[in-house]
Length: 148
Image (cartoon, rainbow, N blue to C red; front, side, top):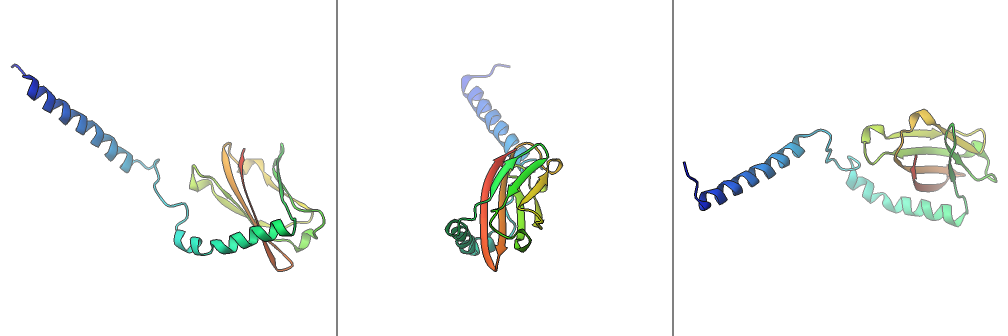
């Protein structure tokens, strides 16, 4: 059977379209390619964003910067030394952009001016850290990305 050039072009188009459709269907069905929003309640989080801006401005205005350092034991969060550590309350949220199953929150309970996040909880890669804390009923926020 002979195939003329018109039939060959049509078969090539059909083959190419089939090839593209195969990958489209495969990527939509694959569990590794997660297409969820970052947070399930994205729109409510967006409405509360002004509170985050105010908390970041409070931290800058009151000069209460948190230093984040990598150590051999894990990630060390250094709170300002001039504050009473026992009066600081809040949470540390660690967000892993590549896998939402690795995200976790830690409550802040200090007896000293630092908090240590153990090395065993952190896998290598990028982490977005969000420290939301209160001191004397004033809210502060610190955001930072760390490659561990």
